Image 1 (cartoon, rainbow, N blue to C red):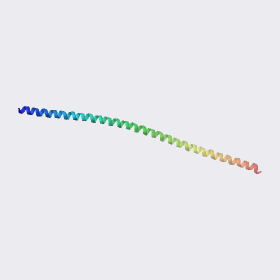
Image 2 (tube, rainbow, N blue to C red):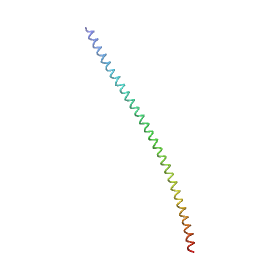
Image 3 (cartoon, one colour):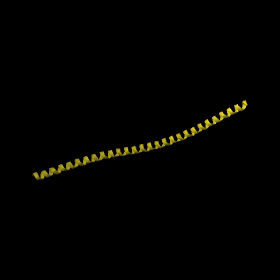
Image 4 (cartoon, rainbow, N blue to C red):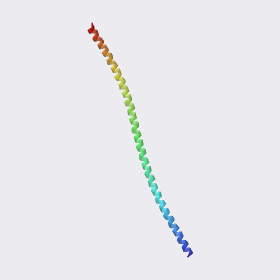
Length: 101
């Protein structure tokens, strides 16, 4: 009778251990799924970050080149304006020279 009782106790402990093992196994699988989800989300965010960074770099390059083009355009306009002023000055002197004599 003592062996039967001891056997039943051991059987109960084995069953409890199996139940805990199953619960731990389920928790492990749940954590693995959650970890996989986090990895996927991290990868998605990394790709989004890299895409955004690339777009920003492209925009900065365009802005810099536009800025340089604008500077060149302004310099060219300044030269043309200066040339026109000089031409107008020459024309004015000729006009005044013809009308003044």
